[in-house]
Image (tube, rainbow, N blue to C red; front, side):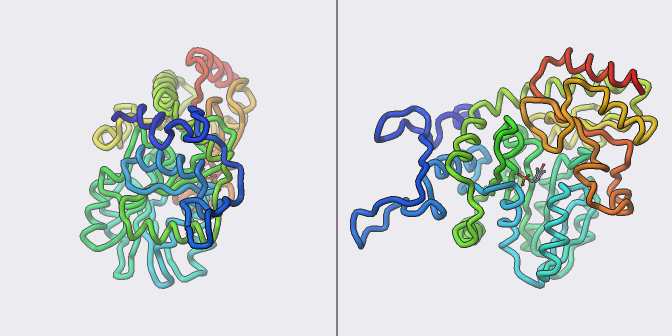
Length: 380
Ligand SMILES: *Cc1c(COP(=O)(O)O)cnc(C)c1O
């Protein structure tokens, strides 16, 4: 079956009790047992819940993996995936990664005895050069945040596999509709379902998908033991989002590309970052490992932070907000917002300059969004 069919039907057969065509919200903490000796599939909702099980099964299928696990947030999912490591292990991560992942690596993992080295996101050789004898995981985010750099998942996963290193990919930006890292050789995929998978800016959630039974067992055990699980209602919202993922992603991407082209020729815009543009350094690689380029767009403005402030103040349709992947378009300054917690040196090293503006392109009319951006650019 094709992607959109799986998104609507897998794990979501009509409810056996009532025939309800959507999976019910099983808002219950516990389940009655038949007898003292029975151990039913569901007995306590931290361990398992039917609404969550439907979501986990659908997530696994969409990523073409065997096992899916849902979490209370994207960072809870990332933390869970890192539980396959132990003190003394070492991580190699791309340097242009989500700020929250960086915080987990530096503020949670490092004091716990797991060090992280940072590779240039676009250079396979840089990941290889960072590998140490105790490296146990390579962490990739592609296209990256906020520069939309593209990492060669196949090549990095091959290098990792030869050395018995686990490859984990944060697939939040492209979503499984545009990129399925397990098919490219990665071992673990993580998501913030808060973004495109939920898709409507109304839920916080995360997911881990793997086809490796051993990794799954460790992460599932952590999910049950540490308990950062999403409630049934939040699972239901993500399930509903998944049903329209394909048509949303296509529209997000078409509008993002339209705007990317329109902005490229604007005199106030110094640079446009979108992997769908033929002059983007990762364009050919993106074509070879993705099924589309996504709905995120970053631009650099002539005039630095003052120009960024004017653009943000001048837009009427783009909401100034931190998240991404929803139906409404959002605008953000990576330097002041998503990566604001990093020191200026760290931001500079990552190429996150003050002149950047990150746009999450929503589902509004492309012409309306273009007009809004052009009007705002005219105020600079
Ligand atoms: C938002 C985000 C996360 C964290 O997810 P939360 O749901 O906010 O915890 C992780 N990775 C990426 C790429 C993100 O955009």
